[in-house]
Length: 322
Image (tube, rainbow, N blue to C red):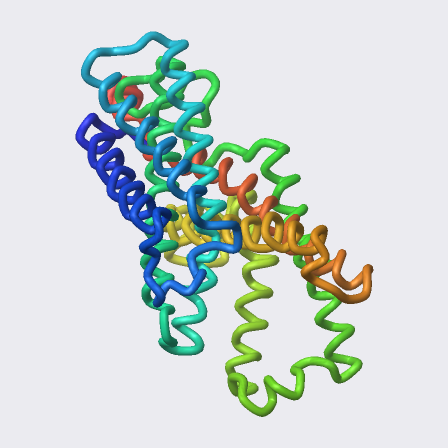
């Protein structure tokens, strides 16, 4: 994705606003309605520091866009924004959890405020990561028409995905199977759904739909990210045969699921387990936490390949061939 100086300036302004709000909260004015629902990690000055880092990265990139920067400077800006983006996304990992809670359980006291607070960090993190990717792209001197490095980057959807993409996809499937082995054991033993879920939880139909969607996200989704049929409709789809699969239908779902699982279970869940905040039998916890973590990480790896393989064709190459 190619972004201009205005995008960098807007991103920097976003982070300055994020920084000022959290600075106001840190000096003793945190609203009661938030009730600690912004992050699993400590609040206070942590988001302020992250806001400073992110604002510095985005605004520095905006200045560099006007004045120019050499390749080494581009890599420095890419690294700074990447660190800030990852840190903000990790700090705001509760955003998809709160969003899912609102969709499935309805609005609760403080939930909308927590959604907005975590959403501010999550959006900011994504903005930083977009700028980081663009700074790296500029540093490697890509094609001015499409952003590829011709000869090193894939040119079309029809090309085979690299081996590491298949490794990520099947790692995700393995993580899903590990997680589902615990669910299957609980179901056979009568522990799922639990008494509370039977009494006050969603209906059996909703639970079945959830398990079906979860299974598709653990099997069909990672395989679609790596295999050719996830980029071009296969022969058995009839009139769709050979046409491009909508890019963000697969890529957007893969990134969302991968980031959510990795942040919630891989970072927060594992941290809570190590600190003793999560208890239970060792093997089921290992299969559940480890399974979710591998599932999420595998999706992110496969999604990186899918992103590169599904770029629009280079206009310059198309013109030369024509």
